Length: 396
Image 1: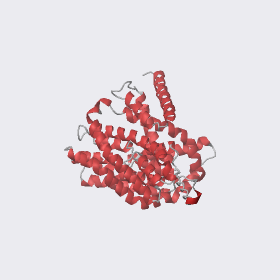
Image 2: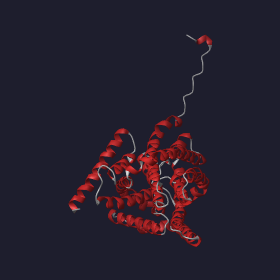
Image 3: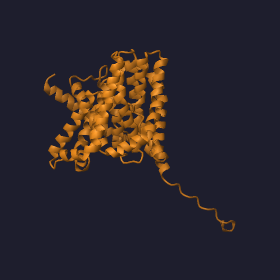
Image 4: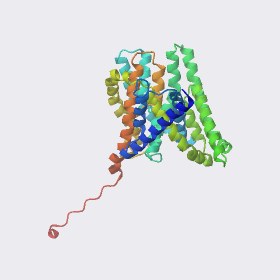
């Protein structure tokens, strides 16, 4: 395609995102479901398939997830995170039990290979860090009391994926016990090393990165974040985990400057990420598995809400915050797609069922999170006291 046509196509994509964002503001809904549907309509088998612009969108989608997790990590320090992880380990265990088991069980009931059942269990287990981070930002809930509980669940899941992804990759590739153990050991060492650097050398790194020039600070922070995320991906840890760890490492003026400079870029590439996910799905393959995906969602949406409710309750959050926490965690996304892609050759319907399930939850989750605010508003306000009944003699 001629470069001029490429620019036109890309410009049209961005203008469509702008229109959908404007529409979502008018109807009071997060733009995420609209972005997903736009990608679905323009992907392979859709109404208006994209050309070479799809490759740019793919790269932009990877950058979007990285920036979403980086900016979320800026909100917390390494000591706060480690303390939260220690307190949140039980929540992570409950989350795994409640949300991995349904997918794994359905895989076995369908007569699938054990490896495929493990993959489907992972698909239903892990919330979308990208969707959740965007929701917290869109709905203005980053500073809410329930947000640390949401973050703890996400981080435990992401760190669990640091072990689960290499495990699945080794099993799918036919690796033996030694190969699997080696992949897990490498992933664990990478995560522990990153935590150690963040905990002990965070202030020093922040001083080295900071500059009074916005241009230099932007290049420094963005370059560092992308490089660490890419290195984490090469080590089979997860680009999202790497970017998050960079975010918690930075503090002070460096973090404040990065938050302001990268906010617009985050919003741009986050929108591209959700469009790309829709582009990766052929609508014609979803119809045969839609019933199974809906049934799986009917089970795992309540289990994920219950996970958020329980995790927030452990931190002393009230009923309204617990409901918001649970609804925010419903959406599945990037990790589920990666897992399904790894196991695509194990069973014929695995990829399509996973895609349909992710689409259902990625649309349902933002809607529930948006409704949770108004629905729980009354739970946060004290109820007026009833006036005492007047003595009989004072009745008119």
